Image (cartoon, rainbow, N blue to C red; front, side, top):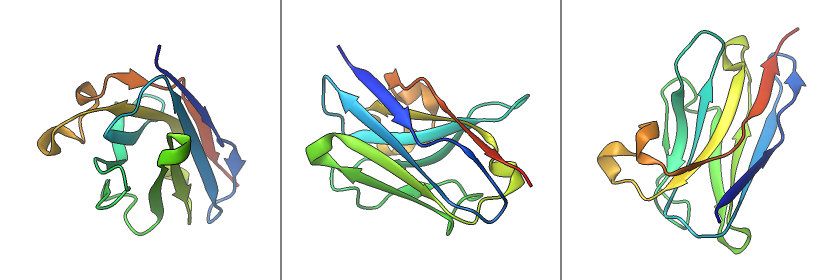
Length: 124
């Protein structure tokens, strides 16, 4: 049985940093990604990687240069380092895993398993 356990969400002031973690049990997956959903908005892709090494991650334009995705294969985990957080980063962040092809890695439907979500709130 595949399970994803996320952690690291919190409240932080603008300009602050957070690190989200997602530990996967049950199987290994090539694709590991983070999505987010803000109140009243659709779920959106944040960052993802199809390489077990974590190489060549892709990012949403809104987070490029501020967020960094990394993977630890030994722990079957994926992380999201978030710096220079903005009000608009407030959302529930979800970890997702699967084996999507490159052209679909930014779509939620390409992932098979999801975490329960962790709340990130950026407020002053």
